[in-house]
Image 1 (tube, rainbow, N blue to C red):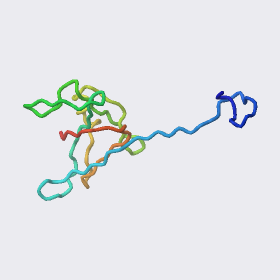
Image 2 (image 1 turned 45 degrees about the vertical axis):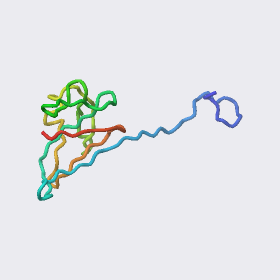
Image 3 (image 1 turned 90 degrees about the vertical axis):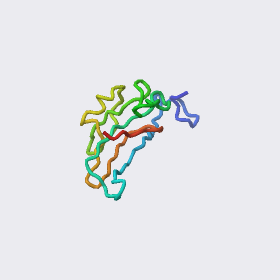
Image 4 (image 1 turned 135 degrees about the vertical axis):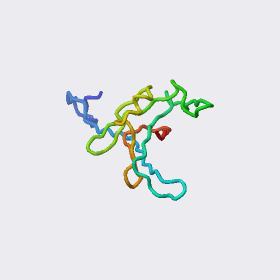
Length: 124
C-alpha cells in the first residue's frame, strides 16, 4: 500500500515523498586551427542526432545527413547556459543564428541538457 509509512503502522492517507534524480549530459567543444592549434572564436555549429536513436544516413555525394534520418537541436540560453530546448527535422530551422552553437574567443562552446546517446556537429 503506497499510503503506509512502511513500519507496519496504520495508513497515513498520503503517499510518502520521494526524491527524483534526473541525469542529463553536456557537450564541451573547442574549435582550433588545424595547422597551428590556435583557438578559433566565432565558429558556428549545428548539433544533431540520429532519429529514434538510430545512426544517421549520409548522402554519398554531399556527405550531409539524409532528410528524415536525423533530428536537429533547437537551443536556448537559460541563466547563461546553452541548453537543448527541443528537436526539429528541419535543418533550415536549426541553422538559424539563435539555434547555432558558437565558439567564444577561446574557441570553446558548450551545450547542456543532452540525453545519453550519440551526437554530431556540423560546422556551418
